[in-house]
Length: 169
Image (cartoon, rainbow, N blue to C red):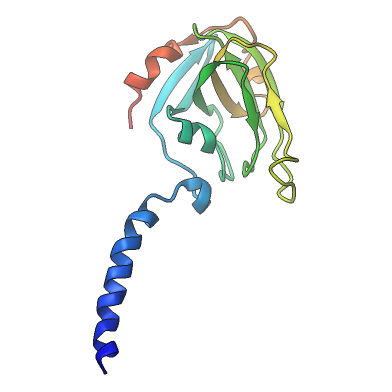
């Protein structure tokens, strides 16, 4: 009889202990796209409405689980200076990625296709920069850079180094 009365107390204790863990579940685990601060970038004559992935966790999740990316939308990533490597795990849409140097100058652009969901993490193809001077990356819909005349040597405005402080929620 005693255990009947203790059951609600045990249940409440269990929920109280697990609730903070559920609240911390990332979109990578839940399959829900992340929502990030936004900034408008100007590259040559083109304008790109860009989400700012400013932390390593935001970088890792990127554009995962999105069934669609509106035209002229993308995401900018803050990376440690060096070679950059991107993969398309849990990414549903084809993308192009531009790798930028610390001054916001585009060094190179690569096209990427969604990974086959049956592949293991080790089998998923990666896109690696040729340059070891990459500090930022911008992802947009496949061929967005080419369709908008954006090419290596073009500079991003505002400079990406200023974006972590100016991005609006």
